Length: 322
Image (cartoon, rainbow, N blue to C red; front, side):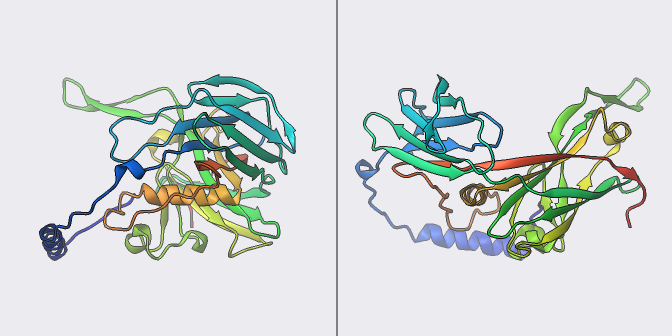
C-alpha cells in the first residue's frame, strides 16, 4: 500500500511556497477558439478475442460536458491486408468479425464527417513463454509466494503481469451479547494485491522505493516491465501475494476456486501508452509536471495497440516461506 508522510517542517514549507506562488499572480491570455478538436480512438486488441474499437470526440479540459461518442463513423479494419466484416456498432463502439492471432498485422482506417482520416496499425505479439516454478503458502504470514520464469526471445519485448483469484468478503457484526460474528459472501473473482523486490521493477524515484525498502506494490492491478535486463535469456522473478483468513477455504480447493497468474506480451505502443496513462493518473504527482499520454494514432489521438495473454493456474503448497 502506498503511503506518504509529511513532517511539520515539510508541511509548513509547502504552505509557505503555495502562499508565495499565490502572491505572484500573472494573467496569461488563452485563445479558446484555436483549440482543434480530434477524433479519439481507443482499441486494445487481444489475441483470440473479438476486436472492439471505441470512438469519441475530444473534449477541451475546461468544458463541463462529458465525452461525446461517435456513432456515424466509417470504420474499416484490415487483418494482414484483408478487410474484415463489421458485426455491429453501439453508441461509439464498433465490433469486428476478427479473432487476431500471434504475428497478425492489424490496420485501421476511420472516416468521420468534418475530421481528417484517422489511421493506426499494430502487430499482435507472440504468446509469452512463461512457467510457474513454485507456489508456496505461509499460513502464519498469510502470504503466497510465487516464482515465475520467463523465456525471453531476442529483441525488444514488453510484458505485464497480474494475479487473480476467488475471495470471500468477510463482514463483522455484533450480536446482542457484544460478540463479533463474521459473515462470508459468495466467492467473487478479483485482482489480487501483490508485490516484488525484483530489480526489473525498481524505480528509485517512486514512493514504494523510498518507503518500502525497494518493494514495488501492485494494489489490485498489474505491473509492466521490459526485457532490458534479460534480453534473449530466461529470467526468474519472485512475487508475494497478500492473503487473509478469507482465502484459506478457497486455497484448499484450487480446482474449484483457482488462483491464476496472467502474463501478457505487449506491443511497444501498448507498453508506452499504459505507462504514460498511469503516470498521468498518479495520485502523488500533484507537484510534478503534466505527463503527455502516448499516442500512435495518425490524424487523431488515442491508441491502437495489441497484446497476447497467457494464464496459468497456481497450485499453492502449504509450507513456511523462508
